[in-house]
Amino acid sequence: MGSIVRVSRKHQVVVPREAREALGVGAGDELVVEVEKGKVMIKPRPRSYARHMLGLHKDVWKGVKPDEYVRKERESWAREASSKA
Image (cartoon, rainbow, N blue to C red):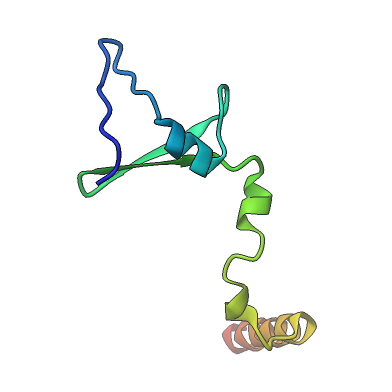
């Protein structure tokens, strides 16, 4: 079930030690709080969003050569532009 925490008069909660240790967070660290379908998710704020996003959806581009992809896109734009002219 997890830990039970109480909301203080200042609307604060204490993150249980087990959760802090599992997340690797301590005093002064920032957390992201999300509410979805009646549930609250708390997770560490990434130190760098660029690093956090690195590799996201890399499988989508598997087997695609960037230069070839860009070349084909530019060709399609040129065809589209010439058909409208």
